[in-house]
Image (cartoon, rainbow, N blue to C red; front, top):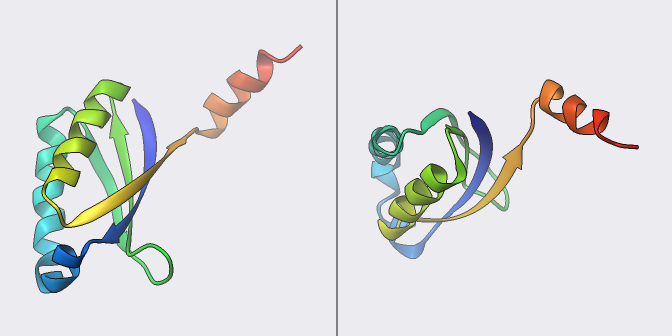
Length: 97
């Protein structure tokens, strides 16, 4: 499974309904599962981003489908970082000349 760090900012709609944010997080985790993904962690943060989540997905297509479904709800806009474990990163380093 590939790991992704998702940085999210509330949209105008999302901040107007911020009191429902924890409930929406549960719904998002359920939605992730329907695409074969798993939200491993979610944090509400201060600063440039309002929410940071760690998501595992079996492939890019599954993650993209989940991300599109999440974004289409209109509560957050996201930026995604592909994350690599120490072992995955070491394997990449092992391919260097």
